[in-house]
Length: 131
Image (cartoon, rainbow, N blue to C red; front, side, top):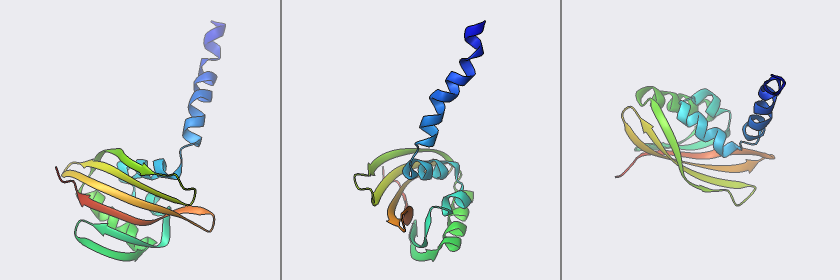
């Protein structure tokens, strides 16, 4: 009986480090998997290069959020898997995800760069996955 008393504390101690240590790459991948454009936009640079399918442009944070919100409404995310990540530099990261949605599979690539001591997304590309 005494042993079970401390079980919840042990479980919390086990889980907390993995949650706290999740870097920006994993947080962004998780937000894409959730289809959460609002929280995702908090990681965007002031202006961001966005490509959604065939449309490419540089947008403000707010515009980029609206574009992704529309994409996620039209393509409800079901799962996301990290295919490739380059995080060997402390000031530059590149990640490729495979995003599975209710309408099909997409390849999502995002580039992060350190700006004013904070990692921000400077480019995000969503393309149809070629099988």
